[in-house]
Image (cartoon, rainbow over the protein chains, first blue to last red):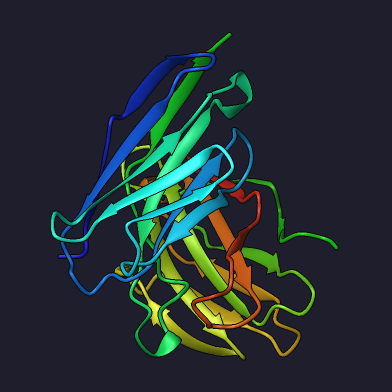
Length: 116
Length: 114
């Protein structure tokens, strides 16, 4: 079954703190794992993505950690800011042959609130 | 460069009616995919089009259909609307089906079925 489980459902962090959101997947055929950020009234926007051949990817304050054997990946937001308050979605897809890229399986989302 | 444009932004329909939603991808993008977002089910894949051909389809009933035109614009249609079809419908575009390409989402069409 192609499921992606995301936790926690909601997260409250103080400004300057570290926000950590976790995802677990079941289908070992998944080979592309993006994270999306969504603000109210807007569509999701790609934050950062990783493939299973690396264990970590960092872009600015955002880091993805990937554990292939555990079938888990997580998003770390360092020095969290009030402007980071949004809903975050992990996702996964199968890219074999490059024909399934648009077919993302999303986690349920995490509502992040960063208090000033 | 304009982003993904979805029209209308809001739509109110009654049960049994049908609805057509429109999506204009970013200029030059040839791949368009559609997602349904609800508080209970989250984001679920509906279908994906590339060069006017449906490449992938999600687990939705046949009442949900779509198409893509030669200019890459896409429409999705829902017939015989049900209360459970109330959702935010999101369109996303990318340049190609390459896995190196980012997906760009529109702001969605909020459909309410009464």
